[in-house]
Length: 454
Image 1 (tube, one colour):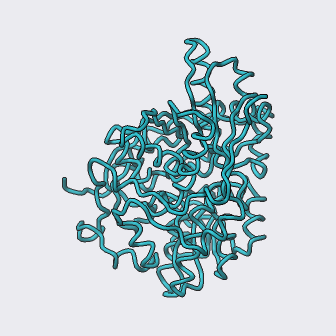
Image 2: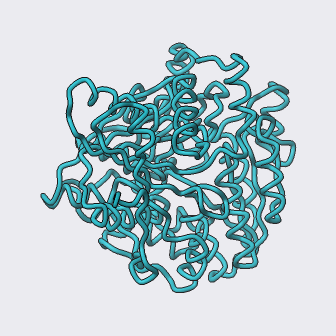
Image 3: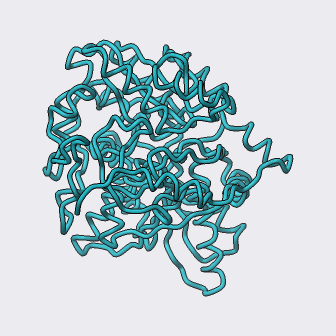
């Protein structure tokens, strides 16, 4: 009898705590700084945007944070998510490698994003907040937050990057189905958006711009708070339920990963899968190579500088030390809209600087080719974002075919692409192009990042 193609957890096996990698690192990450004083930012600096419980999670050094029962009740709508063995892909590649993928597309939003949207909505509702504002690129985060706000009786207002707003109308419709008000960003709903449209009515937007607009609205009303879908420590921590489940599932499969691969934009999906495995690696229990894969058109880890910069384009957030292409750099409108962010999570940037992970960048046409091959073998059309990880996974599996190495590869399939078929249509029609890395634009943006003394 053949072994199962997917590995599931029983209800009593689903993890009930999030994991905080900071507790186990050999050196603490650099603190966020107040942009005016350049001193470490305190809770009061974040209070206009986040409830105190999330602020405390942002700075905690506790190894684990218990998941509230109310959050677990919503998680149970789709968790635990399955771990699949990609046997048909392995056979098509003729590789001795064993490929596993953790599939997050079974959530109500079709991606991993509700893993943090649900607790963020819960903590804000408990603090008496009336409405949450946010940004979204491809629309998966906006969809997740709209869903989560419905679960806890909150209003939701979303600024979607203009390039994705136009490319992905059904993502917009899905946010509206969950009750959200959605604006293209830059928009005429904020002072900052109006200023950008006056300068360039065809501005394609960026995640940094959308963040600025959502923050502007949240900061003006004490009953409104802002929710971020990636980058910050508490967001990454909420996502670690992915990796905690995967650890248990890999044990059920009787395998230990030699290589873990995830796509990276702001970093939440990658951190969610990899951080629990990094804990085990730091403890000497396993030794996987951990690789982040990003778009060649927006390669913050592989070609950005490690410096203090703003998290948004308008320069309204605290300064964070991260790999950045410059806070006002606007990436080309690639179809992996969720990866079009000028910076990388400060915690992932720090882990990269410590040498605990590696990174590479891949062009979008190569990624879509991998996505199509995956769909035709495994039966799931992936979102554009995880096709980056799939392209790297397939390349590694083909290398194993040449060497005969029976490597175990674990990757993150962070969402399905059923609302991204316009992008696949462009690929099939031969209209998709690879964008060159815009050296001059990045150099100009980097010249405008804040100068912070060492």
